[in-house]
Image 1 (cartoon, rainbow, N blue to C red):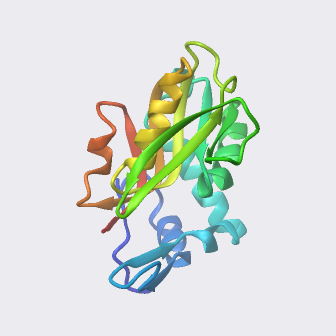
Image 2: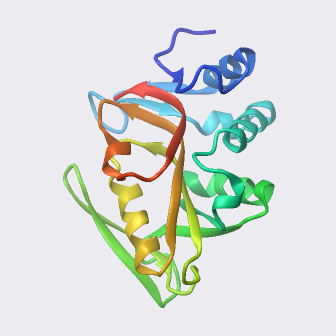
Length: 193
């Protein structure tokens, strides 16, 4: 395996050979999207049948909550759309799309959040969540927690209950999970910011 700064969040959560294979698929791209950032690209995992199978199996077995503690999965655009629906299908759940503002037909509910230099907004369809429905929010990456917190607020504003969060990767040192509050949260992989 090539040298990497990506590690399993919980070393007992996955077979070492599978973990090594999954991590080896990820590309490291210095200076993207801007100078000083080391981008970890998970897209090669989705392009590899074995890697995708390992990833999905690991996500299912490492959820932050039990399968009977939530009713649906909400995935954030864009990479949350790649694994959220197959994860929902494996778990017998529905999938709710959390999209960038202006991409869903009205009526929608919108939530804005701060970026390093500006602001972004995400939306869900107003009737996507039933009153009291328990939602697991998924995304590929938790960094500062801005987009995940906005998704949490959207779920709550629609009458849903946030059951927990599940991420593929977590950037350490940015306290993104802490920004989510006391909700259960899990991540498969950890890497420095």
